[in-house]
Length: 202
Image 1: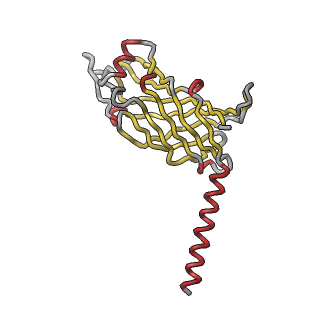
Image 2: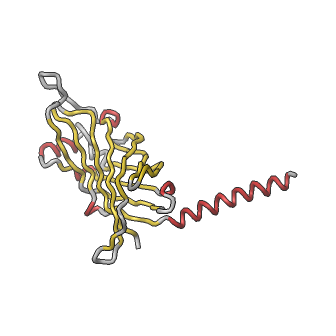
Image 3: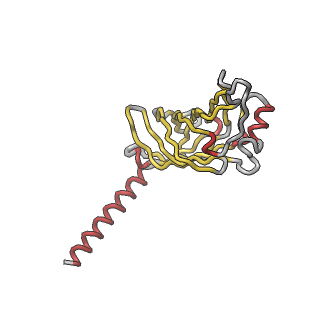
């Protein structure tokens, strides 16, 4: 009886390993193209308008399994020094210890923990986002993936766009001030949009 039970357990483990190996074999590696990818953010200014900026250096790798999207993974890195709000003095302040403190925390990191399909051309990607040395779970609503397109140099490409919102206070970005009416100079809620172009690794 014990031998039969052991064989059954070994059989189940073998099937699980074979299934995992098959899923991994079906996954293709795609690089995030830094030249055609950006992370944009929008934050409220004094309660009267929105300020929008971007991080222009985004890189990373996507392990993509089209047959079982749940087996896919995303790892992305953002160079915080690449922040660009079109105002040099403001960008310098964002890089300073008042905000991102790039001397200590030069990058942001995102690592997916769960990917699910939520409709035609729609994904929900949950993962760990690290900003300013602090990690919290976030969920992105993703449009895409687009169909595979061949570029003039023989590369296969596809794209996606993701959106989410975070509270900057939760990531240790706490600097603020108040104007006489009581409104915060910088809002706490930050809307994020990531536009990514992927290139299939040859």
